[in-house]
Length: 279
Image (cartoon, rainbow, N blue to C red):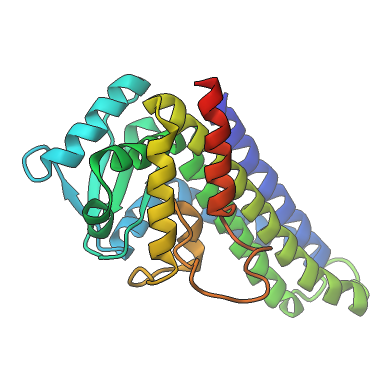
C-alpha cells in the first residue's frame, strides 16, 4: 500500500507539472513538461540516492569498521522485518541523520560523526528507528520526487515567457504572472506538508519499534539544540527535508515557519510524550 501511495503521488505531481506546462505553452508546453517530468522522475528514482550520499561525502561502513552503529541497525531491522540497509557515516561534526533509497532493497541510512559523538546508545537507537520508519513507508522516495517536481515547477515558472503559446493564445499577462508566482509556492507547500506529516509518522513508528519514546525525545532535543548553532557542510535546501532535524534550523527569516520542511521539534516531543500512555 505504501509503495502504491508513492507511485500515485509521483503520477499526480507529474500531471500537475504537465498541466502547468500546457497553461504556459499549449500542447507544445505539455509535451516539453511531460519529457522534463519523466526524465526527472526516472533520474530521481534510480540515481538520487547516490547523488545525495556523494554530495555529503558519505562513507560506507560495515560490521568491521563501525560495529556499534552496525549492531543497532541490524537489531532494529530484524525487529522491523526489513532488509539490512547500507550504512554510511558523514564526516561532519554537526549531528544529524537521514535515510535514502528507492525501496527496501536499495535503502541507506546515513549519520554524521557528530551524531555518534553527541548521542548515547539509546538515543542513537531512537534516531535509527526513526530513519527505518521512513524506509518502511517509502518516505525517502516520496520526499525526493516531491522536491524534484517542486523544483521543476519553479524552473518552468521562471522560464514561462519562453513558451510562446504553441497552438493556443498566450494566457492573459496578469493570469500568467499570478501562475508563475502561485504555482511554485503551491508546489513548495505541498512538498513541505508531505515532509512534515511524514516526520510525525516516522517519530511514532520509531517509538513503537523501540518501545521507548523517551529515547527519541532526548535525541531530538539534543539534535535541535545543536542545529541552531551549526550548519552541515554543503547543506542544500533541496535535501533539507531528508534529515531528522532541519539542518537550517539556525537560519532565521520571516517565512521559515511557513516553508519549514519539519514541524517544530517541541511539537514532535509533545506527540511522543502522548504516545507513552499508549505504549
